[in-house]
Length: 468
Image (cartoon, rainbow, N blue to C red; front, side, top):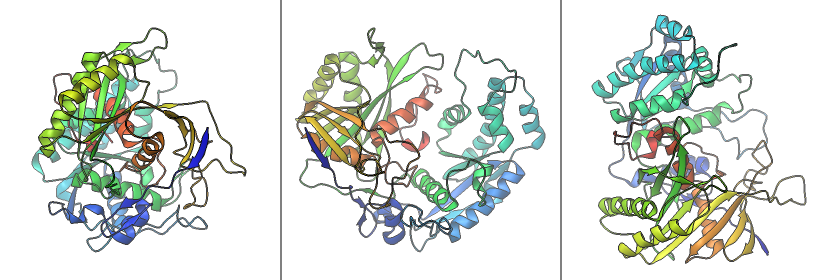
């Protein structure tokens, strides 16, 4: 066994590099400022009741001018102030909202939805209310992102059952997932926010300070509206150009079938492809889903065809991350696709949970990046843990490491873990630098959450911005 601590991966921004997304954006500007096709204005559509629309107007005004760091905290790097959204620094863009881009919900309609007997009925009615206004904006206004502001009582009503209400629904009902799936064909990403989260005063049970909220909100808006990324991993020129692919699984709404989902990131601006697989088999012994050889072959073949269509060449190396262990049939199918496409370098990596824990010599958990190598192909990696840059462990619970198992590897285990650590920083829905899962599997999981609500005959969107 060998114990090492991997270095925190560097991120590249407009004029330099840093390990922290917030510091990098603030000091060096967004990475895609070098993209001549990037938008310097983001038009924000808004759907909500009158009070919610007013709150969003106030929140956007504060986001434009900036929000001070968390008062009284000595953790200056963890609780960084938000410098604002402007054309002059940071995000280098102007956020535009206007009454012309706004569609109000009628209070009487919201009240009517709240009075329905079952949570499923309330969800369906609430989705209908928002969908009609989202559709109008997407079809009649040149907006880049549509923000749906959820009234507090409506949010509570669609996320919890009323007292005494039966809970034997045969289908899963989730407001956020249904709305995103329903609006997908409109080709405009959605951002959902609750009215209470936009209040600057700290609310009961609200864990984030206003500046952190602003960082995450602005980054998500920027990524969804611009379709390019505010930072990227620093490229390792010693490695062949690589395509990273995540394979996950999701249950149908009735829980009867399990299907595969795939996400890949294949260029410097974070562009990729999202594919919906087919229903898969379940292992009778451990109840885990798996791909047949033909399913594995077709899933990877289709992903590589999309890569070729986008970049007009094949990658030199393919890394497949899977949220469960690789079966022989899956490896055979993936290999067949790679051989057919002439790709020689490959790494098949299972990233799973583990009961193994390490303990630090002080009161803090092990450092993020701690790697316990148990063999050439098996190790324990802490993607969450104590962060020197933050001078603390920025989590609420004891961190759980990942089990990293390489099945077919052309790279060392340490190199594969360095890539995983880097890919945990590529989630544009969160600006804290210590994500737990690589974006490949994070994205594949989010895809499954939404995909189960997309009609099988509908072509799903291929951008991650429609699922986050």
